[in-house]
Image (cartoon, rainbow, N blue to C red; front, side, top):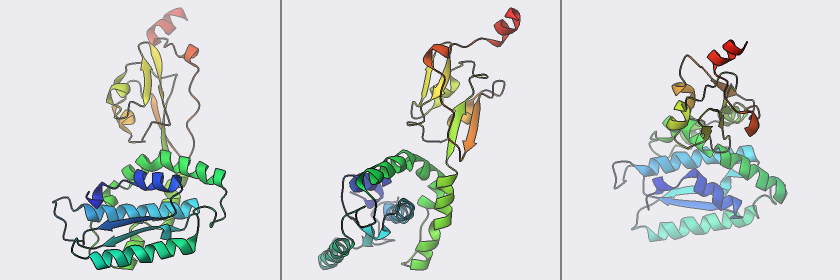
Length: 240
């Protein structure tokens, strides 16, 4: 399998299941057999996730990527043995960092919900190509301050029940089916399924402007189901 197919979600799942270290072996940079050059994407993914691990309080040395060819069996064995030695020195994940099991599970769940958000907001950098093996260049691709800011300013979208007219445009266009909708019912965004792509915000008809973009604050709780019936503006004025 191409190293570029290794998703951040795979790495997160491994750590959340108690794996103490994750090692990726990839082809040498510039020697990919495919036009996609997935090994550059794998490198960028590792660099990003190591910063996320720092935010979580985990040692980023638990995640490593090395480059080698299929003919370099000795290099592969040496790289894996060195990594295993390092992981043993670090000890059990979480426990060695002073994080109890319940807190660690909570942190994994929080980050798991944000993986699509991090992939979207960093999509240009994740597809860039870092030439050579310059450690300083690697460190600068995703800075600690940059990732901390992304955590503190997480974007979310909210459908204003006072403005929603149940036109279903946002629900039809949502790539994740994250919008709970029904005919004549105020729409609600399922925040657990939302990947924060902003499609709903862009397609909501200008005459309604029912969707609000929030930054750094959680979305308000949705209306109870028995209070979601839409009162059309024309009928509301007629009743008044």
